Length: 245
Image (cartoon, rainbow, N blue to C red; front, side, top):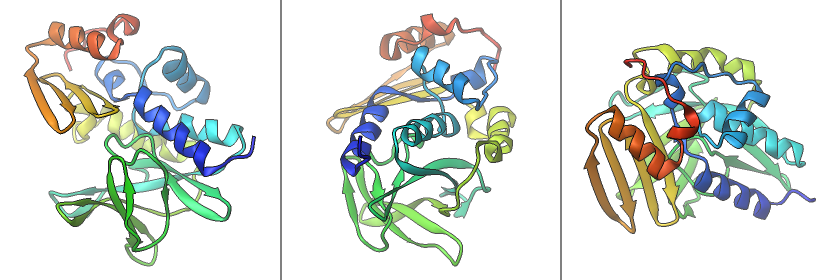
């Protein structure tokens, strides 16, 4: 098989439509381990989801094993409240080189591009999920932004330096345990649909279809588990434990 942009685009889109972005293990006392075999067991065999280190970590392994010239990269996520960027290794993404052109591939950032984005500066790129723009943030970083109301809003900054999995372990542990991490504050699982998205938190179920938004309040753990099973087919397979988080 010759690795092509068409194949990468298909794999990324298929992954996003079938593997949810979620943080449930953090809230049910199940340690997150970045070992590839354990990620494979969780995501592929047990049909679960995960967050960036898990999703992009395993997606990278797939790309590398079928012949893509890919590398893991570190990204620093934009915080609109502080107008600052997070620490290094806050996010894992992937850069893929195809025919001497670099593409940003990311299946672990929740609402992001459905297809790989060509890393070229000041050229607006249109995707099913929005329009994106790359520019230079400073001498060290590249920045990817999403157009919102006609303005580029930063998503994250990154370098194309290749990274190893263990370099992300500290920030992964931080997001898994720190009360300052948004991942520890609320259970969440989200999956795009062909025409929208379904997102479940411990207090709300939000379904978007063709621009129409439906919100339903979640009254407690029992209802959360019912919706988790109904919309994501996960609760019964997880054997979830109540931890009080």
